[in-house]
Image 1 (cartoon, rainbow, N blue to C red):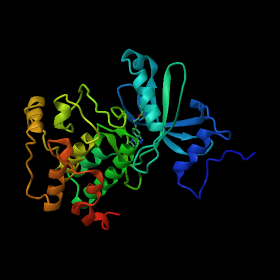
Image 2: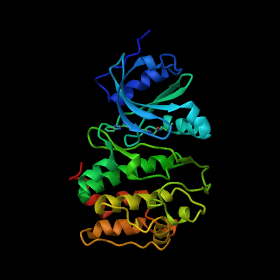
Image 3: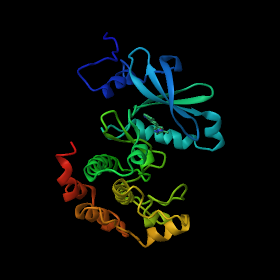
Image 4: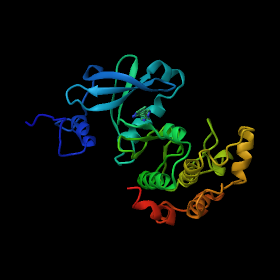
Length: 297
Ligand code: N15
């Protein structure tokens, strides 16, 4: 019988926890809070906090998210949490934050998440104001690859925005929150109610219409604009209603510093009709991405 090892220098650390999760006999490891040393808080959310944590046996460092059962019940989101765990726990992609496992005690649910060493992309954008186009191109390429994978699994993310994007220690993008993602039947369209900011939502979603995976193409256009310009394209200080009107009219102002290639890609993603948006494979072949591919590696 081979002992379950956490330290495998020949492989990426991502693989290491998976061994223990599936156990020696293929069944899931039962984790306990006492398996971890808890460090500083990394973030605070509605239902609990995220902490830096180290798995004692392996020394492997993770982000441990603590959710309070009482709060989950009060807001009636137990089912949504279960669905998110199921979705995220099965995803394997270098640009998607891993959910290694979960456990619970009487009062709390714990999620063992991949550590994103550099935190939120949002903070990096705040610090720098805006990104060089070569940096934005690298993130868009990584995001397009992650979305291709998600869409191949019939998952629509629906909530692409800088707050939901994380960076690992090497500065690689990780899509890190699946709070609003849905798994659809192959040709199913969805209708949903809204909450939060409208800034990243496409016309069909702000208007409460049917939508499909092409909503993520629009959000990617918004993100590209925001990374290059420092603010989202339809933001309006007059508020929610003004933003709504700007989105449905696709009222886009392109600052002079935006290169012709970047402007072209943004315009091809921010198309009113979802079928007119540039598909992910063509995003990856777009001159804006190709131009920066070497320099941004
Ligand atoms: C609800 C569920 C089953 C889906 C699982 N996904 C999530 O819970 C989404 N989620 C990810 N919620 C919190 C996180 C999260 C993961 C938050 C912060 C971090 C994280 N990994 N790494 C971080 C992190 N690294 C940081 C470095 C510097 C400053 C802050 C940092 N946060």
